Length: 247
Image 1 (cartoon, rainbow, N blue to C red):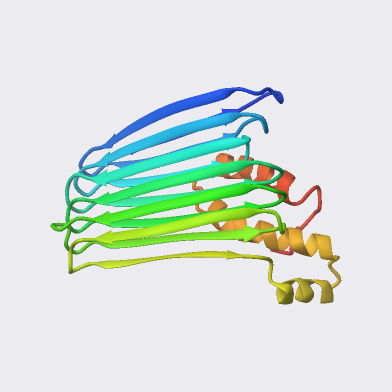
Image 2 (cartoon, rainbow, N blue to C red):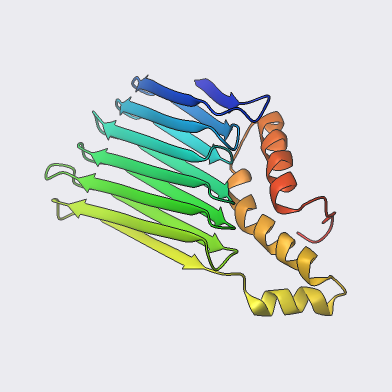
């Protein structure tokens, strides 16, 4: 079992370009947990590729967090090379201003009896834009595949935009697969409920936004990493408001 953490940070507001490739080979019965934390300068450009090959009964989990960068493209390709593997892809992007983030994922079910779970969530404000393009390919011999893919987005501004494209390509007949996508705004009834309990509107909106994103943060198993990302996300979404006891 191994845990890998890639953290991309900037000490200033410099404009720079990062281009990374990460290759992971998960052997039989092995477990790999991979974290990618994108906390770069708001002027940074970032292109990153993660390529994964899984052998029999292996487990690979990805946590892809994008908060920084003016233009970011994350690519993840994962393929099953033997039976019994499990791949979990968790993603969160919270962008504002004129930030643009692309997430392109491919899960290649080339072998039978493999499982994949993918959940990406996005929070967009200002004139930010996001693209989610997720492909799940189930090949002809990959019977008994179990795959689920979801992309959920929350727009905080009329000018924010997201293009979401979850895709299933199924060439086998004995499988269990599902996918879906949502794009919406904050629930007015939920805002009203919090306001009726004495919470001002801006705090109510911040609480609901943070709760939406916190679903992904709760999947981070390393306490120090989870606390660090929570503090960065809170600084962006809560703007100094205290929400103890509200979520």
